[in-house]
Image 1 (spheres, rainbow, N blue to C red):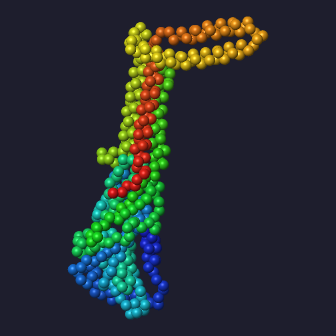
Image 2 (cartoon, rainbow, N blue to C red; image 1 turned 90 degrees about the vertical axis):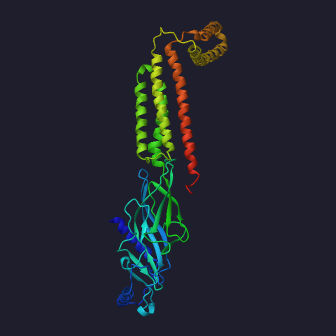
Length: 433
């Protein structure tokens, strides 16, 4: 498998740092040393002379890559190498007795190794490391062991600020069926190693920590991740925002076109599809809920309200003109209608006044100017009294169109601003306990 080949190459690179200069020892020296050490070696017991004392094992975590992060299943998969070393008191020798041999590399299955297991694995519990993986011994008994594997662990997912969410996932290791009186873990450093790390296209690894209590045999390696939000922003968030504002334009469509209902229903169905898509990509949990889920629900409710409002307003527009308009509506509609007409009248009057000034400068056509002035005064008086026309139901519908457009546009704007203000607070702080 390509993954395992990659681990072998990586482990070999790790081992190479311990390789010293070439000495003059022969194959017979290596065989003699191995036979001498294995003659009385018992891998079942901890490699310490005093079996009442615990053996101290130093553990480090070398992150190679983030293979997968499943928000729905709440699990993370990484490729990593465990850095482990300890002192094996049964594997010591004098190099001068073996032709200057200063290190011995054998398969880990032949000697004692800690029964290290990943406690929060999503698969079956198994000992970390395979028999083919090598272990390197030095004359003073130091054993260096670098088992590599693909680790899958459970991870509590917090999608509150999706798609700007941040997560921390821990990999908890412990020796199986052993107590702190038999084995003690000590961390190597205070961070996860990233010597061979390669970036993930979806997740950005920005920090790490090691959780360990001195004298304990439990050790936690915690990875801090944050999502790269550009893909979700361009393919999910922005289309939903655009559709939310596009939905308010239904009140700008002429009623006579007969397309208002189909337009509002189409946008409503599109938002419902996006709601399903977002729900499928988030964990099925109520604690915590995504702010984006709340925003999408608000937009969906607004879209439903716009559809109902459109139906109501079309009934007003096509209502029988013989039915009297309630008295409380007339002043309201007149106010909107007169305001719009007054704006138009002022523009026309201003244009006529400019025309009058131009005509006054033409002395050779005074007679025509007098007629133009009379015409100007007549048209101005006509415009000033034009607002006395009768109010119809279609005027009521048009007035409500303006009100509903402004109301829903403001509502969508406030909901969108609220969403971005909420999620922006997550970008200022890292996720730490």
